[in-house]
Length: 535
Image (cartoon, rainbow, N blue to C red; front, side, top):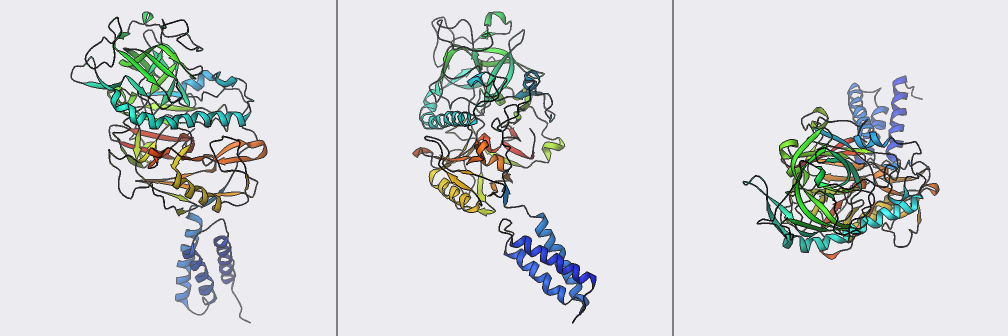
């Protein structure tokens, strides 16, 4: 019998381990890696006969282990806690200020909280023991209302656009007088308005442009909804200047003021007069900011005081503050379904050349003329478990500004939407690639259709979004939506778009990016996602 040296035994052991790793059904390292490991066995058996075999073997051994250890896994386990959130008290003052959150060199830094968290009263969530099933259903219902408004917005927005002259006669801003926006957003920031400054809670939304808050006096005793803080009083602010009726105003009041009106997808609405005012975010002050002074407002705005639009159009924050923040902002959104005490942050004028942000890859943004407020990018592909999908809505060529389809990044949409045919392909691939899941029937009228129970042996495929310039791989908590964690029940956090006119449109919702820092540079027209979680 041939005698083996210690090195031979070690080689056999390593080779056998490599083959077991490669053949594991949840690893899927590929046929090329299998061949490499088989080569190790053959070569190791001949090492004692020829020195060149030894050298060749060492090369293959190193290459094989590199392939096994450095390749990204195609599958992952679900690690949600049994409870839907932390019960530790939250310091709301620090949360709104963004204290304890990382800063990336911007000129303004402030916190973000979710309207369903304990710092706000919407839905009675001052009690942190809210039933997670009901919370999940309510969030998804509002999300679907937002999506339904896309079709209406697409048909009405362009007819409603008006040119509004600013105090600088050399420039003009586009203002929607009677448009349809996209529904109530999901994250709240504390923003200072007026001189002396007073803080208001405003919804931040990349799908809206105009900033507004409720103003006194309201048109009637019932024309303004109840909010926690006192309404903004223009008389008490020395920096408030109403914009007079002039060429470009969509409508004018009887006392000669320029009016605005915005209706949201859930039939909530705001209307009033446009004005210039001083806005304060963090430590930064922006003068002569155009905003809406709401005199008649109704709907499900909860306890928030108004909106701050982050859209790309002319009255959005990025455009109005370009001289202050260079058109750059970044945010990290928390996941309220995992912890009602989690908070995020938003930063304006982020230092894009700092080491943290410079290390992040970027993709180009496209300003779509049909949806000028939104941030479109080129999504080149989606893979499930390492396998690229064949999707009809994915364009093989870069999109243009006039395309009716494409991919947009939207902080106000929760769940990522795929055209219906592509969603079916995606969903089937996800189910086929999962192991040890028990499919369950979702609640009636529930947005998500693929729900299942998981256990310690459950694994789901990694989902990767291939943007032009970088790839973003989603962890499990950004792939599945917790429905009832007491019974380990979750749902695939993607949904089909059923509106016929939107069948070429992909909407990347905030649930897929929660916890990550997204950077938007509107001047250089690029968007980036940091590779590690930031909040």
